[in-house]
Length: 466
Ligand SMILES: [Zn+2]
Image 1 (tube, rainbow, N blue to C red):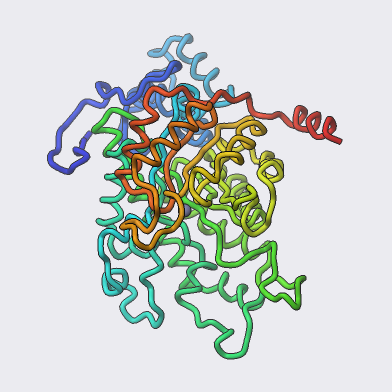
Image 2 (cartoon, rainbow, N blue to C red; image 1 turned 90 degrees about the vertical axis):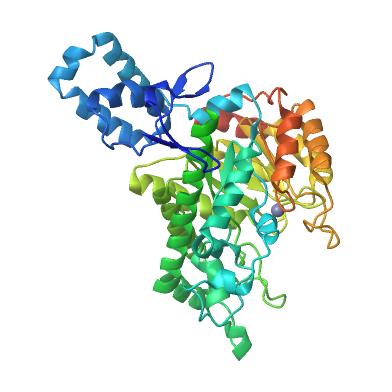
């Protein structure tokens, strides 16, 4: 197996069994970074994938592979019943994702902002267009997700820098990679010709083959780029890293009308939004993400459509990944468009049984604190927190106020208050910010959180409130 140094300086060969990438109280994971099923002998697969991947692979694949294994009589002879029963036990109990194991023992680090970091590379309109989009009629420079297609080496470099800064989780460059958001850059705005954007307009967007292909390509290739760098740096640093498929808000809202005279009007329908998100989710999974992250939630109903899309894709494709959910809140702790309080927001999404819930973006860490405290008190899953680097400041190089040491201080305070399990930064946070945050949180115990809610205990909780 080839191991490529994270800095790209050398290629070494290692025997995979000698690579121990992370230790948790439960398991030693042996690093094998080949996709499941590639040229390992069955025997080898069982010993090493069996240890590592029973936790990592989607359960459907594990079941399929393991059951095939047990049909082979010679392997049954080789492996004593003890091992066989251990394997069956592993497959029947609810599997805990390796990231969930990490969250029990320490605070995991999530990366900083792709958008503000891209800005420091001085890219031009010609750079983002490349060959593929050179004849596009609208300006594309604000459509940063396209860089995954036209400047993949820059996106890879940003992933590498965040990983080397200490990020356990990197996000794909797919914040706006739905057909709906991409339509802003590629479809004529009917409002410029006296028309309006409405469900008929967005139906065409959803069905547009150019936009569907574009959204698929951005998501799949961004996921592959994240996967490549997460695996390289995992391998080089003996620490497992994870790729979160970033699912952003949209440029349209299901909760509010753009027309003050027609408050019942919606430009788009729930099913249209769900369809656009389902396309995104499928492509992210196809590209190899470990997790799905519905983030910067301004509008809870848009987020609901994303979460329903995720559930449907899991059910239809027979593959399930952990889900992280993160809202952006204003001064009163309300989601910025749908105006749900933090607790209401948690109540609206907890049925998804996410790996984590949290706050990101927003107005920076200090204004976020009381709402993080509230969420941490109410939610019984891991809490994530990756705020903007303060408020926008056009005079600052990153466009935001806070420096690496400021972010480190705030997130260190949150950790000491026992509020967080996953920490990082949103807009204005560069790899230097993430390095400072990672250093400040080293050795800080994670917030303690309870076992996931069952349907029964959830019903009891609702009853007790009534
Ligand atoms: Zn942000």
